[in-house]
Amino acid sequence: DSSFQNGDLLLNQIVFEMSFFIRFWGGENLESLETSLREVYYRIRELGQTKLLMQFHPLLQVILNLRDRDHRLEDLVVVTGEIMDEEEFLRSIDDVMHLKILFLVLKTILAYTLGFYEKAEEVFCKLSRSTPIRKDKFYFAILFNFYGTMIYYARYHETGRGRYICKARKHKSFIQHCHSLGIPDANILLRIFEIEEACIRKSDVVKICELFDSVINYLPADGFNNLKALANERAYYLLNKLGYREVSKSYLEEVVHVCKDWHATAKYEWAIREYSGCCAVGSTIKDLRS
Picture 1: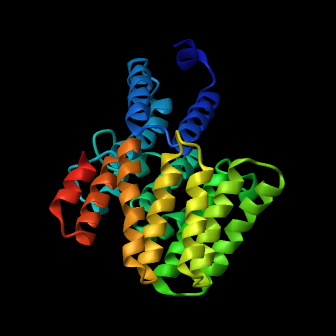
Picture 2: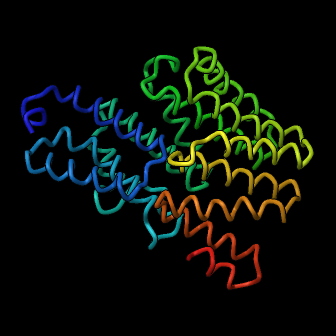
Picture 3: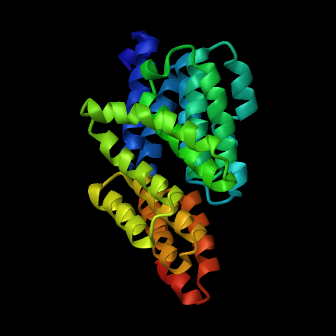
């Protein structure tokens, strides 16, 4: 309470953001993350720290959107709900660059996670134009370049336009630089990129599956549910696109289980519906929900 009342607001903002992204990036159970965010959010509101409270609006609302079970996925890309209204929030922070960048980072992640790659590209381009500093000095540098790479790979596979490969590899080079510096997370991210590259090269299905499995096996058993869900969903999408429909189903089934553990309800319900389109036996879906 003392730090909320008397401390440096900018320092508090940085600490909260770092804590949030470390926990989110580590694939923490979203229910647990929501609970802890709510506790801090309501305490800050009680103390009347409205400036600090503004930072919590998008942090909490994005988690709530990922955990939503009542709305269509396309509606959840809009960061509007219990905690905030997107249009109203953007009007209120128009001249606060830090909050604008935070919002755009979160919306980019949300749009990509929900599978709306064109929208993710649109938001990511706004983010690229908004940041006034070099990308390699950017506060969200790894997130920025990882999601930039994945968005452009996804857009290539959606459109077949070669320029997206060039854009993806540009952002990939930053992660390669991180790997050369010995940053631990960079290795798993490069493994995920290699899957996308293998599919661009149209490698044989055994090679592609080996790459997917190497990513999953590299991740620890506990945590990183966000990356596990991402890798398995890309396996499902890319293998299905290459014509390996039956092989792809096992990865979609894994998306269901991982999203359930992650408590990403919106994505879990999507995966259940998607799986029902791949399987004619209703009992299989019931088994997945159990």
